[in-house]
Image (cartoon, rainbow, N blue to C red; front, side):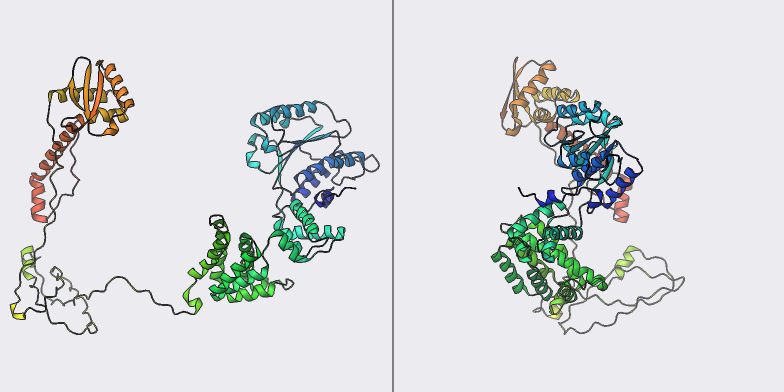
Length: 614
């Protein structure tokens, strides 16, 4: 007798045997008991969570005849009647399963729908089960829409998919949708324990925990891995053998890494990473195991009473949680998560693992390593500020003129010999004027500049400080030089007409504007441009076509060379002259000149623009 794999041998036969999908089982059981049956069901979820199993149990519940042959619709099919046994064995004539991954065309769907006109042969209902329904083509979906919306009373549709986003909304709106969730590792572990107990296979709890975590929420994957582990371990499940089969990292390596990172021991981190390389363990699995340990550490740091006394690793994790600060735990957890995405970018995943682990030491606070924390130094120089001279109180007086203010400013004092730096004298408080008194505005004193040491004090002579004038701005941009020619006048008018009518655009317009007409006869014009990039065959042909449409049926040739008269140069010259005229109007305005003379006003460069003529 051939061996039947665990995933098929222990497939649930009734709703009571379903694991981890209580929300779906409860809704379907209540609907079956109350006879509130929908005509179309859609089951979604990842692989191995029970979509096909639920559809088969639903088909048995609809067609079950009972052990005595007098049963009806029920949520607990008997499993012994003709309908139940035939559905389990896959030979029930009124239950049809269609794999949409290999039968995705409109012809296959139409062939299935042709059977809908016939009533059930053996059962109470016809059940059409379409697996991976998202693989159907658009025409196939459209072909089944009408029947899916209003099927005969004896027909039920059951659709299953792992990607509901690809199912059209017109199909989703016609179905009762159930989302089967990925199963928790604890749920998978409990089910594996029951299965292995029934199979009389000894197993360690840690081995089952590794298998349930590696299944990623899929019960079918967990049972398949269990089959492989039984064969690998010679009929028993031991943690060491399962770790070796899965390529998982021993938790002792993870604990050693976390402890070394908590102590800032880079040598131990590198040695442990090299040990993982020697044993051929997966770098990604190492970061995954570290993430799980760090997550438990963070929970213990936030909620100390959440410790599990029944866990063998609980004491070690609690010790590590006390040794590492909470902020470093969070930082290391984030580094491990993001580091898994970097393993594929590095030439060697073990070198990438080492860099990820050492990253925490690079960002680790110095105080945590027992090193003195140096206060950050400011990069700006603290120049001594001149002492503020108190202003004597005087009676109210009219505001001084600028000349009086300038006269009131004292001349710079001669430089004093260098003295030892002492503590700065206390700065006198700035006086405030009493009511009715106004303090005169005094310009701030300029900082003193040191004089050469070899010059005698008596030879120092005060000279006025020369303030360099601001660089004068040109009144207008340089006017491009143009040498007008009769051919240039004719070419300017011709190009202007082409541009106004939008007969030339893009590169063709640039060719016409940048070119100079150097010669023309009855059937040929010679143009000259400065850049070779404008001399393209396609641009020449389009320009010739535009000239022919404008009434100039001539051939054109383009050469590269210096130009002195082109429409672009003429336009630039005209724009520069308009700019100069506009600036002269502003500069010669009496009001502007008064503002500049009395208040030191300045014209913002680039703020003068000529107004275009309407």
